[in-house]
Image 1 (cartoon, rainbow, N blue to C red):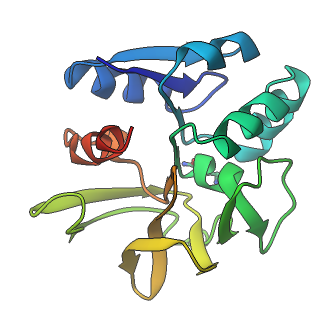
Image 2 (image 1 turned 45 degrees about the vertical axis):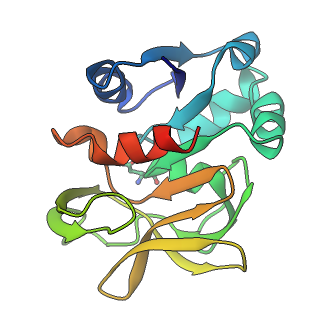
Length: 188
Ligand SMILES: NC(=O)CC[C@H](N)C(=O)O
């Protein structure tokens, strides 16, 4: 059984907690730097990246979390979490971790279709179609060498991984499908 942290300031925390329990692992809601020592991996949930960035600074979690990720702690950023991970933000400046070699556009789908769902096969993750839920989602505009693109939608990158880091524009935790979480856990 793995201890899987969820950054616990705001956003889709209980949804990740529910899925982690459903596949037999232990969720840990992370709010303090000391908790980084007891977890095997961490999820940065969807929510509001500007708020999470500010709280990461205020609580003194920004530096130790960045250090842990750079030291190899497996991390998965969903939506706002993807924004926190990106080294480059193309249309905004948000206080963030800046550890993954991706460039990300915030609120990339504009206001007309800012929330939508679609289905897609991501071969690395599941041979069957997975439902992809987007909520005021970012997408990746470019990646550097060493980043593996997992999923593209209409020409935009919506899932990618680099070493111990995984990022998705969409929210698997808002569906009943745990394939993506299992994929993340398989990398721990
Ligand atoms: N569902 C989400 O996480 C939305 C992300 C949000 N639009 C942001 O910029 O932080």
